[in-house]
Image (cartoon, rainbow, N blue to C red; front, side, top):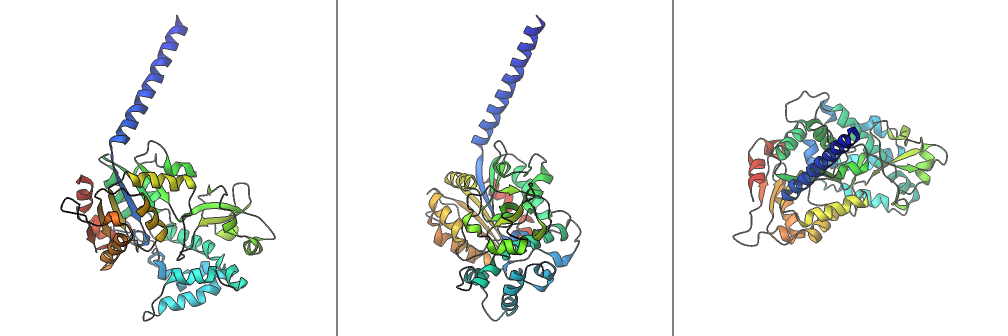
Amino acid sequence: MAAGVRSFRASLVSTSAHLAEAHRCAIVVAMKKAAVILGAGASYDVHNGAVPVKDSNMRPPLARQLFEPRFWQWMSQYRGAEVLGAELARLAQRQEVPFDLEAKLSEYASSKDQRTRDAFKQVPPYLRDIVNAVVGGYIPSPSSYINLVRRLLTDGTHEIMFVVLNYDVFLEDALNRYDTGFSFNDIPEYLQEGRQAKVVKIHGSANWAIPMPDTGGWHKSVRDFDPSLVSDAVVTVIHDRTETVNWRMPNRALAYPHLTAPLREKSFCCPEAHTQALRGFLAGCHKFLIVGTSGLDEDLLGVMAECCSDTGHLVHYVNAGGQAEGVRSRFEEKIRQFQPSGPQSPLPRTHGQGFTGYLDTLELEAFLQAD
């Protein structure tokens, strides 16, 4: 008799679990979809005044600020970054000269000079280190990101895909502070089933690593290493912010950051499952919030042009100053589906007051409430 009761109770528990799972799936299916694209301008504006600043010198850099003297502490450990930074920092300082960081880094990466190509391979480790430095050194809490995350998710009406162009972990930190169920301890968790929000970091992340063969210490190993030949390597999430020269995989092998330097012809640097998840999401998504990006990421624009449906899209472009209109023009030029196509088509909206300024308005709520 007792065994029968236990079996009946176990059956009830199992049935309840299956019903809860079915209910959860039904809710996710019924949700509207919104894609939130976050570029460098979002992280530059991560502080909204709600928390103290630990070190203003550690404000997240924009592209032309990546090789500034304030980062010498980290650059000095990577001779290759130091060598290339001697030109890049000076070009960035000369306001009268157009500066295209992506074009210059592409030039170094494909140089006929082996020494220049070797120097370029030390740029991703340098970038990882300064990104980690600003994440830990600028503010104690990513207040603008937390404000965004809570307001996007709080009413439970939208399934969100965050498409992150940055290497930092401000977004992951904000999601986890809002809901500890959002953990990112391995690659599959970024796309965890049942979560209201998923995260795709198309250019890699400062806490993603691939193994690098040890051919005689870190600096020699980097010279001998060709990251382009290990595209099928398993990507491991390593949260410790040890500087890359001392960074190790869990098995103590040398670690190399899995991120793509800002190149003119850069391509996705994320696991294939993330690329496919993004493609699938875009096909059924009609709302796009685009924050702090230049609109020059051809890899992303190409996938969006290929995958977005032909129906009307609501798009909010958020940037600083007069840049938002230029970003809108570049997106609409590459993604014809974003071009207003008639009186019934949602009108795109541009916001030039920056990330924090946008969140100071009710435009985000209007974005969510729109059909």
